[in-house]
Figure 1 (tube, rainbow, N blue to C red):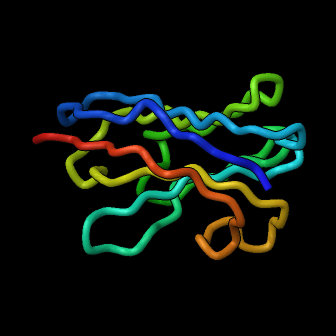
Figure 2 (tube, rainbow, N blue to C red):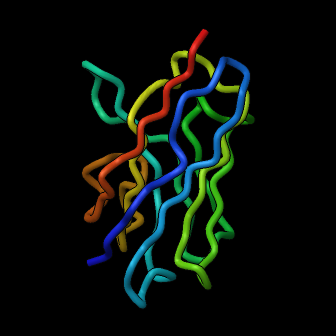
Length: 124
């Protein structure tokens, strides 16, 4: 099990940028696939991005390709999500998640451990 704490959310105008960070506890962080999800009010939690153990492979939801970048620093036990060109429809609570299993990295059920989330609000 790994404990995850997100930070970096806030209020930004459309077209702006935010950088989310997720700090993980535990010595086996580098063994986890890490993902970011988001959940808007009244909607289901949806996949945003994922990154492999080494950071050499990434995957993105179509709606963030070219705008968001996921990265990780295994020495610091952190995973980041750089979000550029934000739009009001990006408003949501963003969650960091961890899994050992690569079978379903694009689905929330594929992750075992979750952070508490950080709010991102994009104004028009």
